[in-house]
Length: 256
Image (tube, rainbow, N blue to C red; front, side):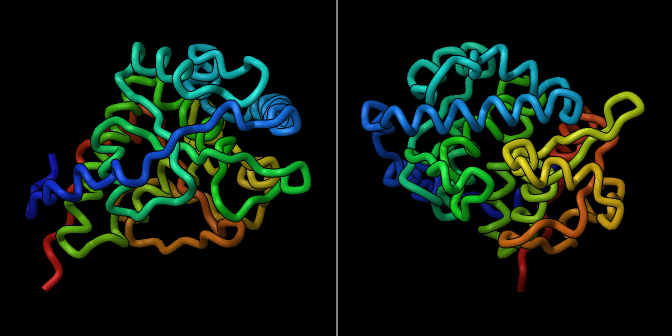
């Protein structure tokens, strides 16, 4: 297991509360709900034979196929019963320390807005479709539920040790933009790919993209682009391998 070089301050662990807002579900319009349904239908059709099985299982277990933008209270009732995770609404991106503090408490932040129909294919800031559709299904998987909570703990310790880039790369190359072997096939694993219509296909089909085997050491040494398609996607040996790698990852020693 990881060695703790610095305990996160209690203010860091509790400070996430200042970023939580009401989802305001009643403010979503008919058009907002229609946009969700359009995004959901086309993404599920695209992913059927392209994504790891636990993701599809999570969609069913959490009833995410119900029409319209999910109401977080209803979603939480199913998710918490499954793995103890809950979602909380936020108005947009939250600072890294608050984000990792949320994960360490089994809380996943969900943007309280959805893209417009003109933004179906690209939105710079993650909205509730990316956050719910992309991330929440894997939180219904017991192993990933544990691993993502552990990423939160690692994140707080890494930031305290001056290694925020290390944990950001670990998160990016596993939870967000990664692939995974399932049987004889390579499938989508990361939430950023799961929620992207264009990049989901490119990640598997573009022959110019590198797909190296995943290891924590390689992933945390590899920079990434948050404003463009990725030049590479790490491929894990299995979902269980990702879980094991995260749970045994060690925060580097503090920067001097």
